Image (cartoon, rainbow, N blue to C red; front, side, top):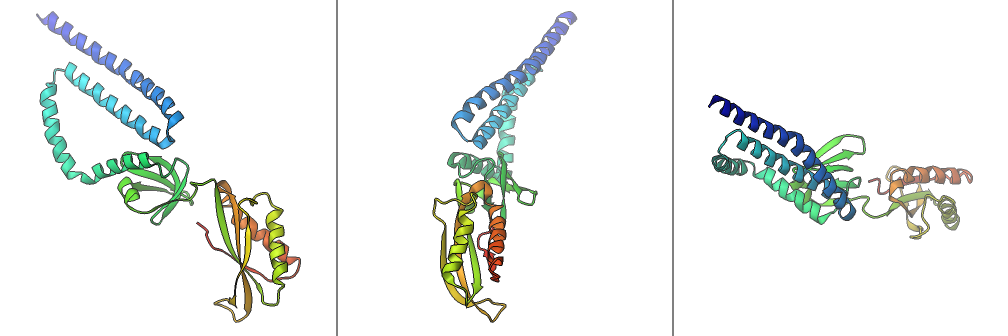
Length: 263
């Protein structure tokens, strides 16, 4: 009798070992195959979230099978788990709301991995979207965790959603300056640098004649609008400012430049 029991235990241990040794690699393989198909049709962060759901679901099934092999009453455990789950769910409504919000974000696809977004006071690069939160790397290299519910409820700006972006500047020159010559000089700078796109067409327009808040000198103010590819949105303003300074230094024209949309 004892030998029979030992053989039963040995058989159970073998099955448990097989579940772990074979089940986990098979689960990983299935997830990888499904993700390869998913990446061809859906966004990256949608597939990453799907992969995590598949993996965790598979792990739960393997754990349940192991418990069954160990002799636990699965029906009773499920009943206890149901009561426990109800209590936990009631106590963690925020977590459930974040999970649901995460699925809505995946379905709506307002951004993708690598996009720069602005949510509230946070602006940065989307690194991952998880079941409960969104991980964003700020432009000064800090990691910020944004709850999915917060991202879904608040207004969200995808800075890099479109392939091109407009950069606005305000340029001021002395009142006695030749306005047409100023416009010509600005266009010379913009047209001679391939960084700045010619379609949409860049514009330079007279904005106002006024004084700076910190000065009594009357000056002419111009609005400059140029378009760049989104990957140059951060570096282009500094390049244009430097080139405008070099251009107007040739004519000894004292200019001031304000970047109107640094974000």
